[in-house]
Amino acid sequence: GIFMKIISTLLVLFVAVEHFYIAWLEMTQIPSEKASELFNMPYEFMERKRVQTLFSNQGLYNGFLAIGLVWARFAAPDNAVYGATILFLGFVLIAAAWGAFSSGNKSILLKQGLPAFLAAAAVIAA
Image 1: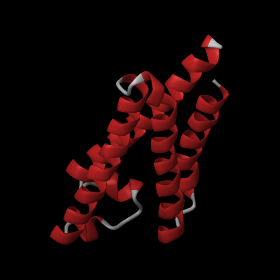
Image 2 (image 1 turned 60 degrees about the vertical axis):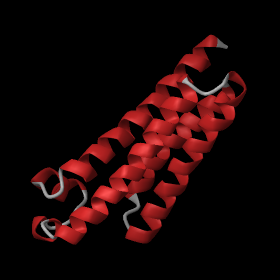
Image 3 (image 1 turned 180 degrees about the horizontal axis):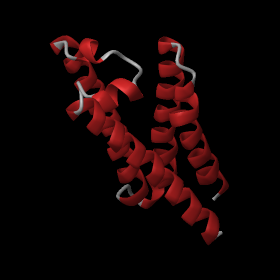
């Protein structure tokens, strides 16, 4: 009912805010001590222009995921809200799985994958 709809919307918004934050970090905070700590990379490595460019590009994609979730939940046509929300949450889940696999950092599954999974489960249950 209405309770699950509210919970699902809050969880989707949490995932969107998380990805806006990641986008901000990757696009504006490389290099920084905070980013170095969060991404577990040496500050000196993040000082390289090429690394900054790669992070910035990655941040843009994270921003697109966040925008897509907000659009899906609040601006998509009524008949597309469910499908678009699940689609963008699916993109986040795939990105989390790939990030964990390709980087060897399994905590990405917990930090990004779990919130997206919970949001998707709530959307499906609503």
